[in-house]
Length: 148
Image (tube, rainbow, N blue to C red; front, side, top):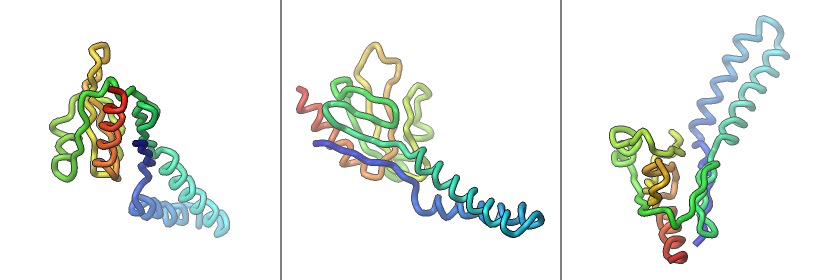
């Protein structure tokens, strides 16, 4: 089973970025009205572009898990567990190991914890933000079972 997801920001992040519009207007209106409108538009468009460009892609395909720029063979994965709500908050907070590889975004609450089974890898697990944690876990398990 192949899985692919781009963890793009929620609409609220784009609405919050719209606060750059009045900020740009306030700064540039004393200079000129056209400059203020152009600056406010450029600020908002740049923020939206940065939010989309920084959204990681999570994929499971051909026996490989890709999370952002990192990749690992499913053969080196011991377990994958999904977490939502308070459990996800604890995984990102009090239960977090400083050695973990993080691909988390504040706009996606659920996370998947992928425990690594490779003695030569100093990273104990990956913590990955996703909007569909159960599907990601299923895809990882299917990839592991197909390789067994």
